[in-house]
Length: 333
Image (cartoon, rainbow, N blue to C red):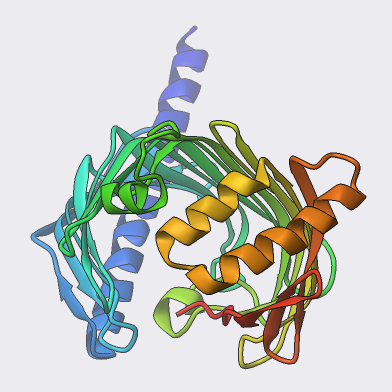
């Protein structure tokens, strides 16, 4: 019994020493990275940096954190920010946001409130913290903009997983339920209030290929850019309306997409009404578009549903044979 007691005591002391070394190293790495960004011109402010969590984890907490990147114009202000790592598996990191924080872009300031907002990351420690997998979970998310709009999501998950193949390709899944668009958007799209306030479900399953890996440089320097998007499904359900999109797009260095997406729209006439109400569809073009879409819908055998192709070529977008205008640029700022 005494021998076992000595062994347990020695192991406890050894583990305590390992944990202490790891906690000090973790705290210093975080502090050194913040100092490095400040030297690079970022605004970096925080009241305290401490690592706790003995004996099984490293829990690093930054208090009254303020970060701003003058090059991109993005900034974050949070009363606290927490990083949790299992002491025995430090390549797994959970980042947890406080209930309220502020996120600023070059165009607006967003006040964010959520019952839950955290991300579990699996990183390659020896490869500039390159991302292997991540899972972000959101519950009761509310966003208020200083431009006067607000929006909310009942719950949502975002998953990203690196594929074991060339090309920096990632499986991406996003699933949101109970999404309430900004009030002004609802009033513009549905002035009669026929549709439910919340979009029932919005789901994306895709594989995205980037020009480089998502690692620490994505935060320090610039965001990797999409070069190919294989969209297995984009699905949106809002009352009696349902939209499904799938297809493949290639994206050049300027962000111009080329390719085709198959579109299936259920109750498409109501969607035309929404487009007209929002101003996205000119009044003089509405009749022509409805007549043409009626022909396309009739070809599918279900006049209330529409199956057509959204084509991207030469910097333009075409819905079936009809030009819609310049293609949107796919660029991550």
